[in-house]
Image: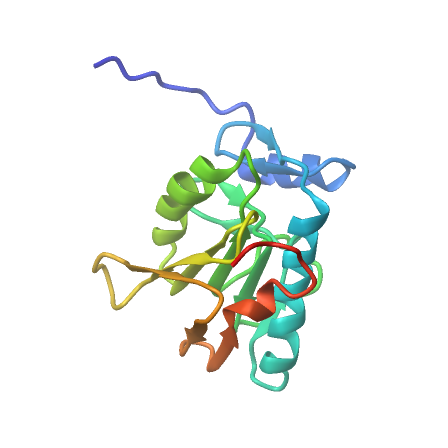
Length: 188
């Protein structure tokens, strides 16, 4: 098997400086900027609902929801911008990467399934502080939840649908799955 070795076009710090002055949104694959896909109104509603569900539940908890402009450093020099995340580590307002991320939320795009389900899963698993990775479907009510049970053990994966509740004991909250999809016209 031939392995292609790529030489980075820029460092993570160079990317962060470069991306800061761009109108378009990019992630960094450790080698070069990668344009982020656009979305739909329905997807935007789901992202809004994630933030609306997290904010009041985390008030006065020491944890805060951020995103989608809050960067997460993953393996190597890779930088991801999840649709939402929760950190319980206070960061300065000028920080470009969020420390101590505990939970990550990604809402699928029609074109992002492979990246979100495989590449980002592997990257987020490599970040010791991340305890839960939630992938929300964009075309129907449902989510896949990956949970780190302890240390280096494999993550447990479950699927949740409209009648279920997303339990996140690592941040002390629960949210009915249907709440993430309020105001959308998606099938259960």
